[in-house]
Image 1 (cartoon, rainbow, N blue to C red):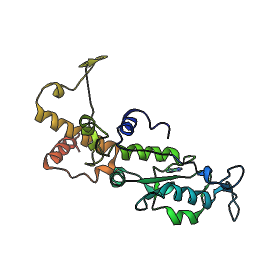
Image 2: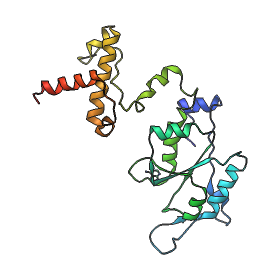
Image 3: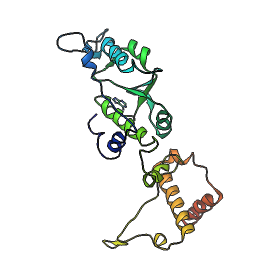
Length: 233
Ligand code: ADE
């Protein structure tokens, strides 16, 4: 699992907060060339991963588990991954990520071991490894202790159905562009209001689907109405 050993997730692994192991399904082939794929019954393009090696790999990985862990199969045909799913998975002690290649995996072994078919979005990758890493990164940062307190403050982004407001740091003028004055005012109530308003505007512009789910306060409505009034609508 190269790529997960750096930065925040790497530190969490060193601290023993989580461990990630990769298993090569080819090690469970029972032929000279470690082949795990074959032609699809019924014809068609591409190769299909055989059930045997996948099943044996799963048995080997889960043999010491007290209860069978959830097995996530990365596939464009799965339920689309989101923050809520990540929160659910973060509660589990152990998770298996089954990464397919080629045209797919023999359906019979999927029926036997997969509990959660998951897609990371409506596009097709060449294999499940990158999607698995996306999921592992997202889930890991929800494990208690992985983020320090400062980092976890920014975690709310998708939970309250609002996108994050814009952030600024020094200098207060960059290439002639000023930091919004309210942020320099020290007036905490006004800053909080401004940030909420920015989040509302961003969410409405970028993610109308999410915006529909937002529980607007009276103040939110007043603010949004004031904008449409200004535009003479
Ligand atoms: N494998 C190939 N494409 C994928 C996707 N979008 N999500 C999960 N696994 C995949």
